Image (cartoon, rainbow, N blue to C red; front, side, top):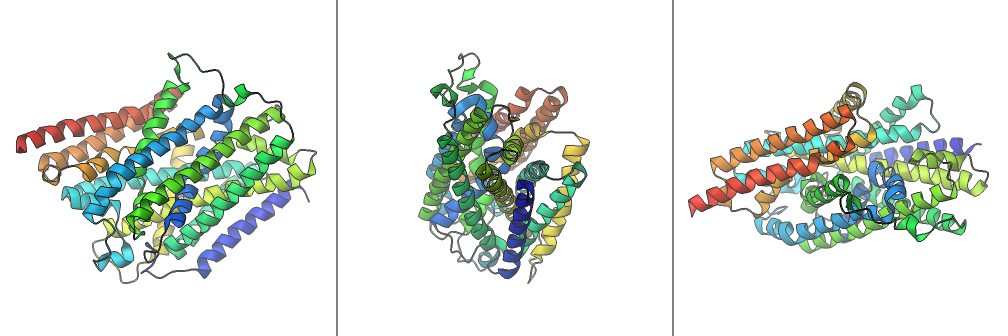
Length: 483
């Protein structure tokens, strides 16, 4: 058997395993979204880290960015730490104060709390809730698109071009089915398995590469800093994108609100977020180092994750081609599945809780996930076939879709309720968010059209800054008027 055949069989085995796992652990509606409030720090952290270990970013993106920027690219997880620290200090205490995830109300037992519910309670407006829910859902669907896109790309190493769409559909169907059957408990448990597998494989490959004595120097890991006019360790557009995205991402991800709602103790929430950060930083560092070592050992390798996989498969070293390559590919598949299921389930919860007028006695979650599957595949065709976005351009675009609602969410957490509930503030929240979304998407589309990556990288910093500025000015004016 060839390394590609072993990898293909192993990948099918992984997909079958998770499909069967979802069927066996099918849950009822009372535990579908909140695991009956049983989440603890390690489960929270493992699931958070697995969802953060995106195939498109940490694996596909970091192995190449590390080659260009060395360990400076780890500014990304460090800024993630800043986002988590601010979230734990400023936002989490407010959520506890406001009773987010409180199980004393019977309606919360099965469906849990959502970001949409919280927004509605703070602004006293269904319209604000609907706008924020729709935008955050679009942001998460965008993450699904990029993960599926990269999933198709990695399957290209042993599938003919005409079959790559079949791989897309197969991966999507498996992830959507086991998520639709098993709910949050299945997602959390599979996330734990997926992340630990990725961690072990990445560590093993890095150790193996070090023993091969690659021709590396300190400058490979810490390049000579660029001039201040060009950037601060990273080029300015990339640095601003990384800082804005990772600091604003935590409040904007539906996934985090779902995990908080499923955790009894807010101390566990804080610990779980920090535990998740440490795990994310470790796996990010491992893949950056993996990329640097591999490209130094095998300089003829195409600079991409696919290039590494193909180079490993064609190596004369048996252990590298027959053992490590299949394991690395399956780790990539694990990263893909963990991001897809962790993105999908909060969408299902948001739709069920925020847009249904009357709750069904037995909600048909699998039916809803099937509808989302069709929508996701359609949007995949629109973005990558009709609009011709590539991996990098769409990757920076989704950040703006995910984070543009953050200003409204932050004000909901720390703002005065009397100010938030005024008609002016409600309208401003809706209008400013839509303006920010239009600016971000406009910059992304224009940058993609003229092939200017800086324009796309700056979409999130510019859009979110404008939204924050509008909200701050209006909020302060209303507050002064009320006083």
